[in-house]
Length: 64
Image 1 (cartoon, helix red, strand yellow):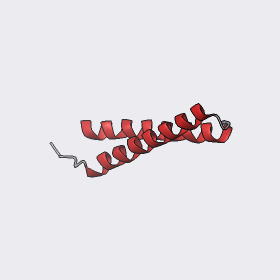
Image 2 (cartoon, rainbow, N blue to C red):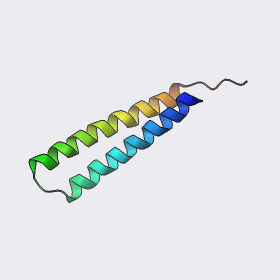
Image 3 (cartoon, one colour):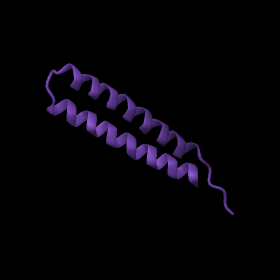
């Protein structure tokens, strides 16, 4: 059960990172610092999202 909770937390962090990257991309200018932040948050959000989804899918619940 702990792995599934960790997967949910990672997935939610990934969604937040991807939303932040999308909003920054839509409202930001062509500043170099802004582009680096968008790329960093987008990649980190994608890694968290897909690792969380993978952890949720591959965790088996045992009946106790």
